[in-house]
Image 1 (cartoon, one colour):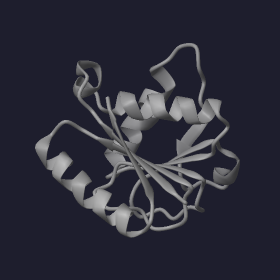
Image 2: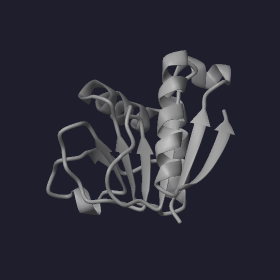
Image 3: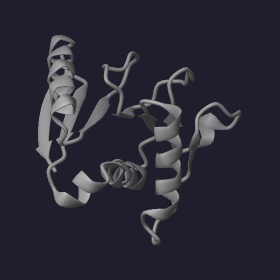
Image 4: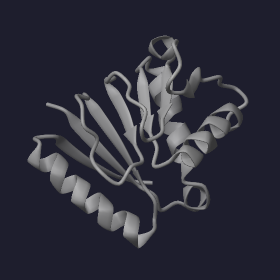
Length: 140
């Protein structure tokens, strides 16, 4: 059964910079050797995550890139802005406003503290529930 984990941001560290939580989740996935896709809302967010992954932890180097190159399959973490098609991977971090299409073993939903973000996450929760996902909520 596929699983969806919702990470609801509440801690000041993540409230100020929600993409730090994306980096922390990516770091854990890389340590567990889980090939990962990060679906971003737009190209600017993809670039911001790309830059942050290089700088957020001096002790860890996470191989990553923006999707769309010939070596996508060999890269541990692909950052995927809208409009770029990639092969499915077991783990997906979804930052978009809709549930992703495709087949994934696990989806991580990062939800900012903004009320509009929370409302959108409730809709995605119900959609994952309808699709038969095992659901978990994590307060961050």
